[in-house]
Length: 383
Image (cartoon, rainbow, N blue to C red; front, side, top):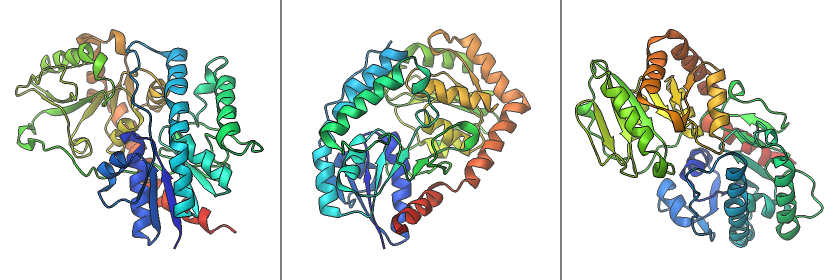
């Protein structure tokens, strides 16, 4: 039996894949603990999760229109660096108290990598988005050097000043929750494990009788952090679907209530939806190209219309489009005509659905949480 410590940020999209892997390790007889914000982990994993509490900074709201280099600067200066600073004391206490054989650090929970190298604990990276692995930061002029300067500052204060590896990538194992067809990388320690799906403990109730078997169902979602500037986009999606009411219906995930709960027999608007269950019955997805949503859709062989907003989303959208499983539209300029045409393309033509199904087969063959757990077991067993 080995001991695995997961270090994660208070972000559902980062906790869920780790939770799936942790559940697999537990089922195999290993001990698992967490260094994180307790309420975030216990909501996903359960009240009995072994959590070493970490302080996290107050949530900061990014200006809705921020894009590109400005968004990257905000992400690092206003979130990732303060998060590492805040989580480091609790993560060190978790390492000392739990004494893990392997520490699994989410790529954005840099406190995990810092604590591991400082204490000499073997560690792996959990990369919930392939953007960094795929070199998305390096594509912005000067951005990679700037990020490395920030990482060097963190290492000097909290890690091992003599270490030379990139804190974003464990030199021994980087678990990436996708397949090679959707990202190109030069990071040597990468292992593609496909999708590590985790059953949500608190899936919202859903009126399944509303679904019309004689019409295609479209799931529309911009995630949980893009509601402030998603009103126009969701309204145009609604109009595009209603103009095709004879053949389409849409379920719209609207946690911010920007559509005021407007629903009828063609469009159902809810503050939360059981996404994994709905995807099994969906014919297409319209989304912001969040990595989890894209991979969960492709896991079911469902083609997408993607409208990336910021961060890793343009990278994810480009890869899904290049693989033939998605049509990309511009978020800020999307209207009912363009969105309707994009939906017609992915629903009516055979190519996008065939590409989505090919990727479904590749994702499922990659092994998911079981494969990730196997790689972690092998790492723990190394002399």
